[in-house]
Image (cartoon, rainbow, N blue to C red):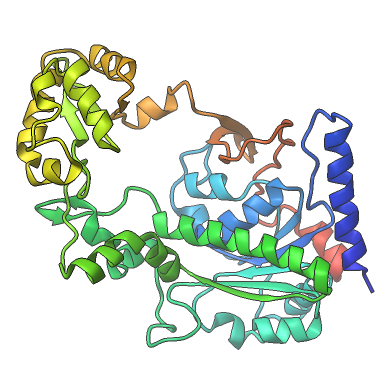
Length: 403
């Protein structure tokens, strides 16, 4: 039997010694960890991708007839999907027909040796296959299981299928996004991303817990719960103000003013964001050249500015519309006022602060944004994006019989 306390403490000591000795690359901290995934789309693949980035061996089990359906979302990255390329680097792909006894047995053999099992299939699918988390942990008491669903393991909607945009609607986040005229979709898969990163954090906690106990854990993360947590401020606002509606203000903030986008003379938009009344006094005196506004009771406090939002926005717009975007951002920064350009995707692609990873795909290479955490040593290189069943023959030979 594997000694999990020794294995993980040993890895931890290796990390400490590498950092202490001034090693020039981030060690693969999860290099002794085997992760097996029945995953699709984004939430679960994102969680397992982060584990792969840390050196875990991640075996991605896919359907023989097309694999992870995210492979077919588009074909823009050298013939591969943008979603798939982003969230599946560093994994091994094996195509298994889990309705075939032989292939199911191969999967069970992998799980018997695994440290982590992640799945986000449709509600009830793993139960019908005999792969429920409770069943798998009974087979392998050291296993950490992570189920990702739309609505959770309990409650009246637990059996509903759920995708990102549906959860944006059901959770209320779409109601606080958009313009006064209509709700809007967050322009990226926010619910999937929130659930995937929550799952990743919980799995790391479970690995640390296993160091202490030697036992695995069962984790369940839902897209709805992940987005409900993101909705904490509108919920608290509703519960304690008695107001039903959290106002939709486009690129403005419902509780702070001025905090929004203002037009410049060259057609650009500059975001101006204040956090306190001292910043208002600096904005009024230094940028707007109107020191008389600094202590005007209509504007002196944030509460007053929110009540007089239209007038405040007009004052700021009068200045920004008289100068170009570069002049506006320069003056605001010089005065110590937080500001930003309203960029499009091209602006992000060309942004000097953007850090990219070079990822190898079956058809070439691609740049993807680097994970946000920066370590004091360089990160280890990331693995390649697999083609469907790229590692199938080797995995079948290792865990079952080749076919």
